[in-house]
Image (cartoon, rainbow, N blue to C red; front, side, top):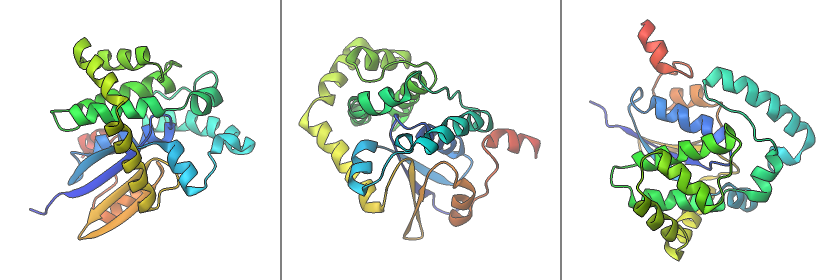
Amino acid sequence: MTSRKVVELFYDVVSPYSWLGFEIMCRYRNVWNIDLKLRPAFLGGIMQGAGNKPPAVVPNKFKYMNKDLSRLREYFAIPLHPPSDPFEAMFQKGSLSAMRFLVAVQERDKGGDKQVEQVSRELWRRIWSEDKDITQPASLSEAAMEVGLSDSDIKELLELSNTHEIKDKLKKTTQEALDYGAFGLPMMVCHVNGKKEMFFGSDRFELMAHCIGEKWLGPEPEKSTAKL
């Protein structure tokens, strides 16, 4: 039996395209022969470090993004609904506190990446499906409660997320993404036969599959395999 290929997924919950990449990689985790590593990072730091501009600040890209997300919602079967004020949600509020919270969850997660996966999904649901805040402690607490974390756990995580330890871990992961060549998120880094292959965005899965010796079965692989 061939050894499992490691795939690192760098993401930020402020990014709707990261949500698409996240859900696809989670769906394929047990279809492809991969070991998925979730890497919460800070998109703002990556954009600044790479000298990039987000599509939402370019008028024509912003118009396209709204239409694009509508089509992607149907194709990927993910409940994407842009917030009422995307600019405020993405740039004025941002995601720094949310990503620090996720790093804290991952630091204390005793079941691998199970809890960070669940809380990440809930935060995406809040901002990109329900038009809710993801920056305030009460908002982070609600997301954590939705996935079954206790009040005492949440209190500990909120405190931990404000420590230098967690802030430094998020900075380190963000810098590692930049070192891999990141200029935005999501970004997947596949480790195959001693080599590292980097893929950006949520539209490179077929090419990624080819490069790692797997087969792309569409956005809902379970439905595809059920037909075989």
